[in-house]
Length: 289
Image (cartoon, rainbow, N blue to C red):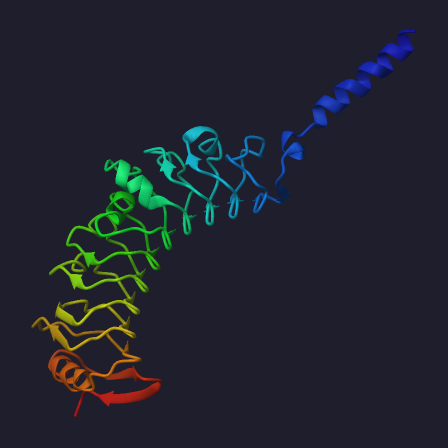
């Protein structure tokens, strides 16, 4: 009898010692990556390894993003929350996720969040990539998410309803290298809106309603996409510093005078060459004539 009891205890203890809670999770674990896409989830799963590095939660039914249980996953580097129904994010939720570098919040209802609360979502201390595309964000709403992101390098605000770029929009994102604003309804860019972005290399303003670029001063910028706008004038600021701009996309523009004006404006402040894309034809302009 004692032998049977010992054997029973050994089996029970062995089962307890090897039980892993995440084995009951709807997510598939591969190494330290949790694949939870398209599972009909209404909240972030609890029973995942605390050292999960990549958490993919796209195409679910998440509506509210709260600190519990998300902040349990302090080792998470990549968080994909795209294609959900998120309309609430608890302020400060990302503050203690020190490893978090990539955040995808595209295709949610973040406009509702910005309408109800103007305190911001709190700091993004180490985030380098943030996708806020296709959230119906209007002018003044994006600031809610960008107040404190000092290391952010890549930002997408494409596919929203932004009409104006304000001077304060990017004050909290000084390290931006790539900025995507295409497919909005931008008509106005306030003076100095980009002047804090001293590391910006690529700027996409395509598919908007821009008619004038005034006081252009992004001297580190290398590529500028202005295709599918109605650019009539392009003014640069006077400075002894050289422009690094090497490519401008003006596809689907009817204002051919823009090319001549652009060339005159940049000639005195740049060296080297520039490639301009106009209605699918590559036009080469030498700026050292």
